[in-house]
Length: 87
Image 1 (cartoon, rainbow, N blue to C red):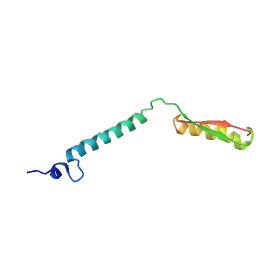
Image 2 (image 1 turned 120 degrees about the vertical axis):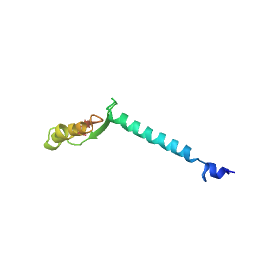
Image 3 (image 1 turned 90 degrees about the vertical axis):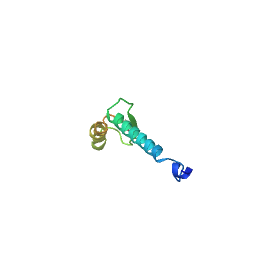
């Protein structure tokens, strides 16, 4: 005669239930990854950057003209820099 421990294991979960749960969790994870990679439109995350120097110097121009657009391009538009200069 099968005991409850034989049917449900030591932790109260049958092997069949465990495998079904693990399979569903793996499928949900793969589905969410696939949906994230399809490029569904979402609002970009805005990062605020503040600098004490006014815009116009070599460093500040490099940040605004080169670095910030590169960050937006590499993140496929998911990140956007909102810049605040001179204070």
